[in-house]
Amino acid sequence: MISLIGLMAALCTTVAFVPQALKCWRSRSTADISLSMFLIFALGVCLWLAYGIVREDLPLILANGVTLALVLSILWMKVRFG
Image 1 (cartoon, rainbow, N blue to C red):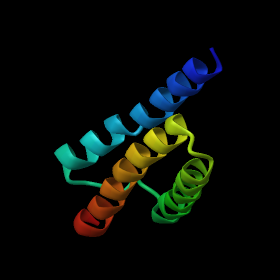
Image 2 (tube, rainbow, N blue to C red; image 1 turned 135 degrees about the vertical axis):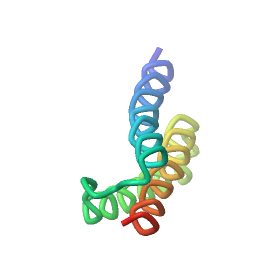
Image 3 (cartoon, helix red, strand yellow; image 1 turned 90 degrees about the horizontal axis):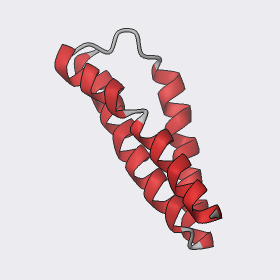
């Protein structure tokens, strides 16, 4: 049951970034996105991913790996589209 709760939490927090990434891609605008917030968040996600890898915790690894990819794509769009 604990793993299921972890997987569901991971799914929710990861999927939460999909609408933002899609909106940035479609509008080609990231003017309202804070670069510093996303940089700090990306660092936090990297640390969570490292923690998950060290603990060999699959929900942490999957959630933070996918979240990092989404956050990095938003950061890339922030740099590219301004």
